[in-house]
View 1 (cartoon, chains in turn yellow, brown):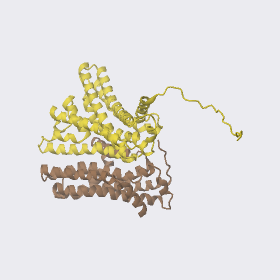
View 2 (cartoon, chains in turn brown, green):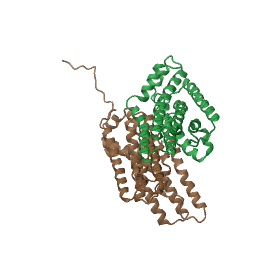
View 3 (cartoon, rainbow over the protein chains, first blue to last red):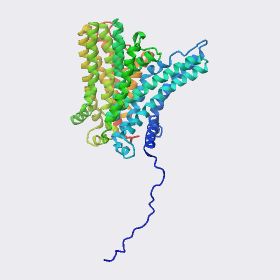
View 4 (tube, chains in turn green, blue):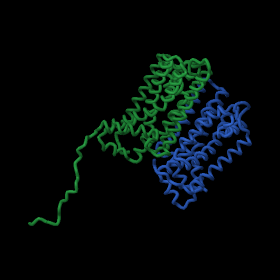
Length: 295
Length: 239
């Protein structure tokens, strides 16, 4: 049988890839940096930059005012509020930031079913979860640590005691680091459970603020009726009072609990265990959530 | 002005699957706290008024209002499925009215009824406190639903803005700047509660005539504007 001469194979110049294969670590790093940039709207549309940048500005302005007041008032030797108090006072802003950014970080991937595309790259489930978790925690850390940095620089410019201020600043940083990791875990798990963005936002805010409202109300009633014993234990039931308890026990903070008596070192240890348990738990829950990547 | 099919769809979007459970969380918490407080302090009218005012009316009603009000329309606009509803021969204001009625119903069911139960648990409706706060919750439900439904049609970040209003404007600015209280749904509702409750248990900073007028203006205005807004809705793509 004669060969069919009407068909030919043309060389149209396909070439094999011979560059460096950047691999899993690079993919993980890219996912992390994209998520972190996305949390501030960088690399996204102008409209989606508004909310995170606005909240970031709102977070920093009180710190500037505090510094200005501390420098303007003659004879002052320290800042009017402690570094560790700042995040507790601005918790609503932190909550709103988390509620607006955690769903955009994970819900959209789930809703538009792009998660399988991530996993067609050389990353594993643990890489995706770790990158998203680390990015959200870093974004929150930037949000909460920048005002502390402003206060610290201001305090040094005002020639307050260096050792004293630096110690307070370091304690504040440890506390907001713990807060960032805890909140990022809680926010991401709520967002990953609800692919619809609106419900995710509401669920996160509800998780952060309702227990806080309930805990403060019950603590207030317990304080007013004189049964002060259980107050230090009630703080275990809301995220922000957990951080309050840990930093009061170990980081020299003043508690916002009624009466100003935070947990003692022994009870504070329980607080720390609960915080670490929640962080580990939210990591485990996220890992379980992404076992089936399709939905 | 009411379409049963739209109502059924909205109702299912709000309470379908596990969402009813999320909404149940708050009322259950309120009732648990009430039982705990009753066991702790016994019967005390002042504590009852503080808890119902501070937790039920200030936190629970706005939050449920945000979830129900924006949830009635927001997710549909967000994922674009609203076009299937808008392409049907149903008037846009009718769609808004129906969704508003469902949102009001859900908010009332999940906020006013638990408030009444909590009030009875706390002090057995002494000084009419339970009834007063239930009236306030009912009225606030209407205004919040209308307001947050409007937000849902206006912005993609309706939940965030709704929460900013409910938490930052009403609580934070309300306690710092007394003028901000005049523009607060919570205070308007409290003005009604003040009339019902015994002397000195509820304080509202707004007079009753002002409160009623503002409530009506906000509710009607928000509903009408939301209907107009829906008549020429542009669907934003996902960012």
